[in-house]
Image (cartoon, rainbow, N blue to C red; front, top):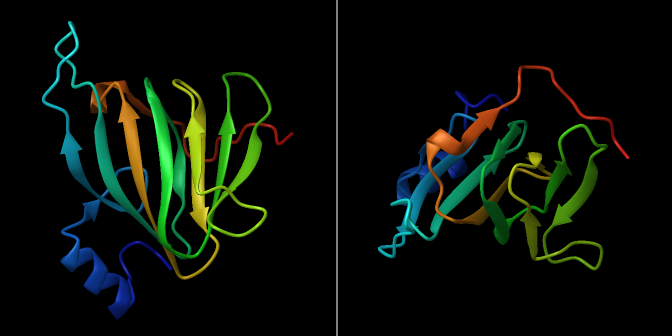
Length: 147
């Protein structure tokens, strides 16, 4: 389902959770920004709620900090992670026997994700805190080699 066409259920969640479109795809809202600052002035940690509807990919991107994905609700989620110039590894976020409830993406690793059902809601904790200056999206169509 394209991001500009959402079901009533998803539209209700977006409104209730006060989410907005994320540049990588999906919808998000920052829910926490630590008041503890590093020497650089950067927040020690941040957290968001992130909703991925069916058919919307979290495009390949990387963040200059560790990112912990935490399953919240809905369908399980496929996440792919790749270090620079290395093959990527596929993981499943969820509660089934072949999934993990939390997945850590190391700093500066490429990542993408998609829901395995109608929608997936996750929390993402970034440490040190997320800042858009440390966020990079890959060129459209870029894919690492699958390992």
